[in-house]
Amino acid sequence: MSKHFRISKHFRITLAIVGLLVGLALAAMTVMSTPWFRRALERRLIGALEDATGARVEVQEFRFHPIVLQAVFHGLVLHGSEAPQAPPLFSARTIVLRLSPTNLLHREIES
Image 1 (cartoon, rainbow, N blue to C red):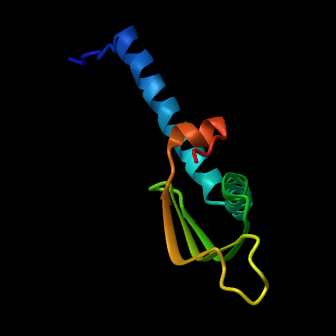
Image 2: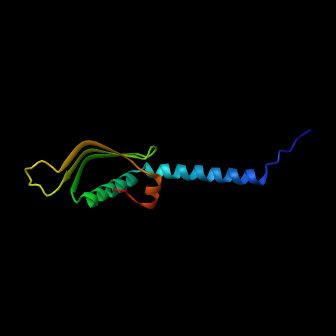
């Protein structure tokens, strides 16, 4: 007495879509975990900060946490038009940015 279990077409389509989304999420996490992506994101964020402020930006250390889409700048210093011996325009030990998935996809950084 064997029963044949039949899966509906709608359920198979839903299952395929869910599988595709999980696969895309895993691929995105893999790419965002690479040093290449970290360097590209760091350059993009520093460039956006320089464009928004008109200052020259120095960063001691940059970290990116892809699971929570969080970028952390340690030792951030902004140099404006101050004299070389004067204190910088702005400095902070740590700056934490929460990034939006939409902005990452569209390559936009909001000022």
